[in-house]
Image (cartoon, rainbow, N blue to C red):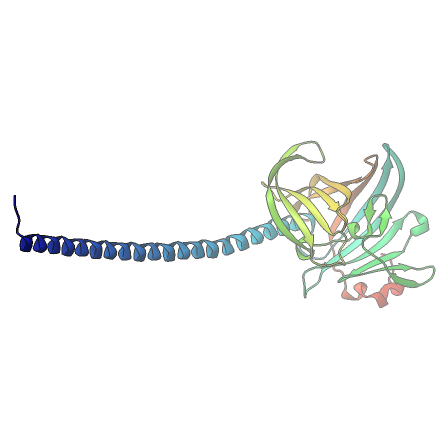
Length: 298
């Protein structure tokens, strides 16, 4: 069909107008898409922020749970008010007894912080009779009546066999260590019975405690401490302990033996046996360094 030049020009103008309109429409759509993408980006950013915020209380809850588990096991090991007991330590090598001593322990929780203070009297052997150890706060003192001198000692110092000074004093681990719950495991206890346990990683909050860090297994069903591994600051395994022979003492099922196995030579074993639990009124005066020369055994 023949079109006049004027008609062709008009047709071309219409096509250009339509094309411009389409381009404008596409631009609008692209702008809208850009806005939507920007909004989606803000939403994703907000979602990420919310998730990050949600992780904070979750981590705090996990840390609180670990400390609660550790505190519950402390309550199994330690009576909740002042008490006394007798602890006997016996060292074995290749199954044969090599040494032993007996201690009378008086323990009282500090009203200010809750950590235990201890007075420990050596009962046997005769060469050590009436020597004393005193734990008050982070201070540990040794008193020898023959010299009437008291000297500060380290809780990490060897007492007998695989037991250190810090192993015989009463302590609440939840106050000295920060706990992290690393999972649950089935482990054999000290009587070769399998227990389903929480596994805790404990890190010392002070350089003055006995061990730098501890791995501890606590029975899920009853909070009984089952097993522990004790490490030096360098990460060396110092000893492994098993808590066993649970009996009802001072209203709670408590371990009456702790078996300590040397970290380098498993043929060296020390067994700590606990007996004669009794509620005791432990005078504050007994728990002062200046009183040590005046203490009289009952």
